[in-house]
Length: 264
Length: 282
Image 1 (cartoon, rainbow over the protein chains, first blue to last red):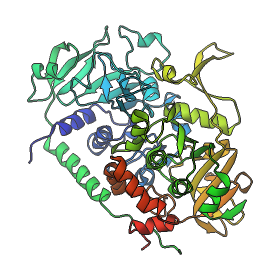
Image 2 (image 1 turned 90 degrees about the vertical axis):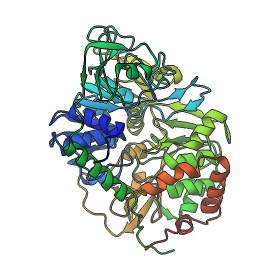
Image 3 (image 1 turned 60 degrees about the horizontal axis):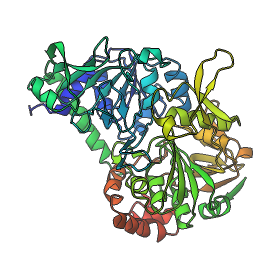
Image 4 (image 1 turned 135 degrees about the vertical axis):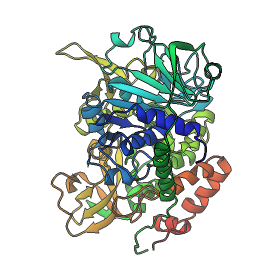
């Protein structure tokens, strides 16, 4: 079997954190792969919600967009988008939210809006989407992001989405109903918040990574937990399922679209 | 309700300076209508869409827009909208004012618009910088509990344009699949116009489906394939390969302009657009 990539480590590590039957609000990209890997392995009854309004979806291939027809066709049901946010998310009916971001700080706050000043940005990023309210109201959130000094920063250029705010319990004094970030899954391992200070600290490493490599990838002085574990390598079964999912997806997305015939 | 061509529909209902919402969350995006707005050289539009998508990338790059109300501006699963970025970062081809929200905030604003209330209400925009960037995101205290909540002004577009699977001859419109915020954007509009895949004698049964009744629909244009390269559930699928190709097409100004010239400005209508891509019907 070909060697395991860092993307595969991340996807498998994230998938294992999802409990069967949990209700999970899914983002596109690595989170979508992780959630569906969980569904196809240890969590067959996980409920996947995409913000397009598809609930209980069981896609055979990964969607490119958050609203591919595959999601609607394999959903238990489809609701209008305002209901997803008002009735399910704000209503407290989502267990897990999955987010990515261009920048993250040591308290799990996220930037997906701009690099540079808001009014004259060096880089305009896509923006908030569902993230601020997912992070506010899901019972817990997971963040997936590849680490670098440009992305894991001392200070965000813009706070799109609050994690633990300024830390040390700041979040619990606000009105967000959810618990905030439970783990940040990076391409070297996993950061989790310190129970008292809320600061993200290194708590688990992938097999071939050292603490020094992890420190070198982070733009603030990275705290290290008292006990740093090693993540069990992806099993052959997990990799088979994940690679088959990606292969089906590539094939499906390359299919030419046939429009119905019509009169000119 | 009037039946007309897409050209007539845009000519009659979309004026320079109007606020216009072409809604459809990934699904049923009214590309044919967007292209016709470009062909007719509309200017100074206030564009409204939760996810600007390729259709607004094209309209912004062609200089149609002065203002954008939105909540997520990327090419889904692919990356940036390069024309939107160029407008914000380099002010090309003209400056673009942003009225930026989160999905939850914009959904609340559409719901308020549909109900003709002055503002939408949510427990949102908590402890982030969005309300500093957008002074229209404000706070209001609940008169019953005292809880402070976020308020966003209702969205009431001059014109909402949707693409739907079907209309009947009386002008009732039915759409299904992922319905996004289309119903709310439709009911919030001062004027609603719709392009459809097919016009039928009788709509399929839809006891709980989304139906926009003939008395809220100002005009309908029959436009098969009108959502391509997005999709119309039951008619054709999303052209994900095209969304991936768009990244390279739109990356540089010259390549973008040449593509728009060949496939939009130099084609007479949406059938011509599809034919120019070699996608004329099977």
